[in-house]
Image 1 (tube, rainbow, N blue to C red):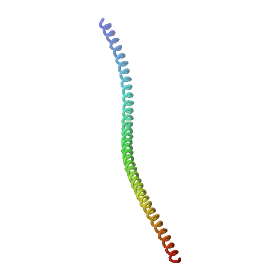
Image 2 (cartoon, rainbow, N blue to C red):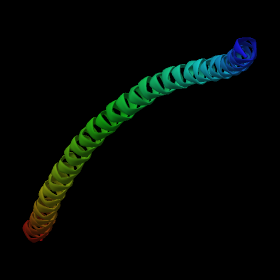
Image 3 (cartoon, rainbow, N blue to C red):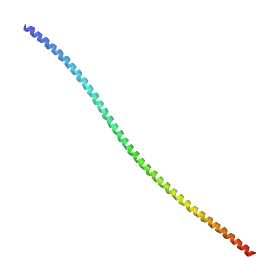
Image 4 (cartoon, rainbow, N blue to C red):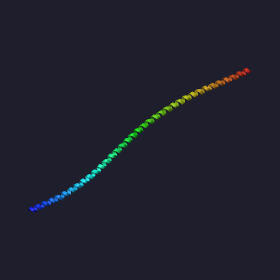
Length: 131
């Protein structure tokens, strides 16, 4: 009877050992899978961190490009305003010079008319004196 109990207990222990061995193997496989998954997750995290750094660089470049564009637009507007002011000043100067030229032309015509009048008077006087 003791031998039977001992054999039964030994059978249970052997069965428990086999179950424990299988459970240990299953746990080991599960741990290996978790380690593999963790390694992949770490690699993906590093890749994402690298992408974040690259995206930040792109964002910084875009901000810099935007600032450069804003400065160029301001410079362009200043140049445009200067051009328009210079063009307006030039138009005024051309108008003033045209008016002065017109006044000089009028004076020249009057002077020419006066000269012609004097020449005619001189010719008439010469003819009257000759007669």
